[in-house]
Length: 217
Ligand code: DX5
Ligand code: ZN
Image (cartoon, rainbow, N blue to C red; front, side, top):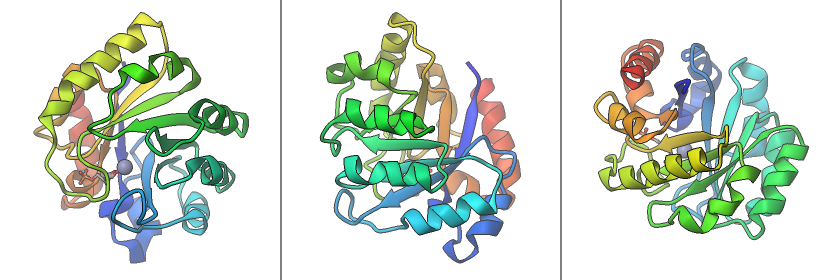
C-alpha cells in the first residue's frame, strides 16, 4: 500500500494560508477542514477560501466537511477545486447519491465516521467510495490525543476492503504523530492526516518526510 501524508491546515496560520500550503509541497494532499459550528462546535472556512487555496497551491485539496447537510454543500467544494471531498456518514441524508454526485463532478468521493459510528452498517456502500475516513479523535479541534480504541475499527475496515477486493484508500485523522502513525499503518490505514504534528514542527516539510518514513517502517 502506498503511504500518503496529508497535512491539515487547521493547525496552520490562517492569515498566511498560501505560504503555509507551500511549506508542505512534498505532501500528497492538503487536508482542508471545513466546520460549520453545527455538526461540530467550531467554525473554520468555506467555499471561497477553498477556491483561493486551490489557486495558491499545486498540492491537491482533500476537503473534510464537518458540516450538516453535506448533500446540499459538498458538490460546491468539487466546483471550488477540491480533488477529494469527504462527507460525514452521520450528516448525509443520501450517502450513495451524494458519493455518485461527487464522482460525477470529477472528484474522489469519501465518507467519514466519527469514533462512535461503526463501519459495519456501511459495508455495502464501500464500492461507491474512493476513500473511507476513520476519525481517531472526536471531530472539531486539532491537537487532541489519538484514540487507541479506534485501532480495531481500522483493522475491521481494512478487512472489509480486502474482502470486497476494493482499491479504495483508508484515511485516519486525529492525533496522528510520529508516535502513533506506526500503529495506524499496522492496523491498515494508508492515508494519514496530521495537523499539529506537521504545522507544530519547526520544519513542516521535514515533519511530512519523517511521518512518511515512520508509516513505511
Ligand atoms: C479534527 C480535524 C483534523 C485535525 C487534526 O476534527 O478533522 O483534521 O486538523 O489535527 P491533529 O493532527 O492535530 O489531531
Ligand atoms: Zn480533518
